[in-house]
Length: 159
Image (cartoon, one colour):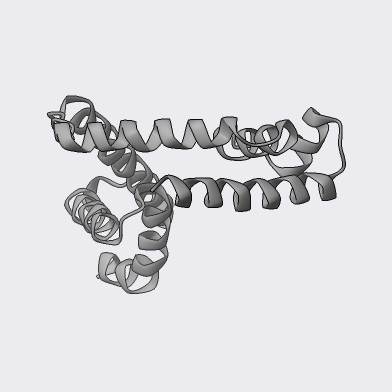
């Protein structure tokens, strides 16, 4: 039968196409399998059996779109879980640690403090920090390293 020949020759390539669209192998195989079932049922109504592969490809694309639309609806209406609330003790300890770090930062020289804040709070790259501070990348590395060492030392003395 012609559908069996199409299946043998093109199943894998159609699954690869569907995987690229739906990003899931099992779902892709299901989409392609459904497309073959549909073409088998509609074989007598095909006007041009030579275009069956094109019909299959279009069917796989359309069914993949349907899967993606369904996923979007499910995600949109999925119940949102409650966020894990930290205990009161964790909040108090976190606040103490943050205030200790802020206090230790205040004790650093200005350039070291600026470099550390821009790096770890601002999440800037060395090049961006150098530009913001008007210094070289090497100076940024130096200020950051010295600042971290001094910060570590101050925090160890506090504990």
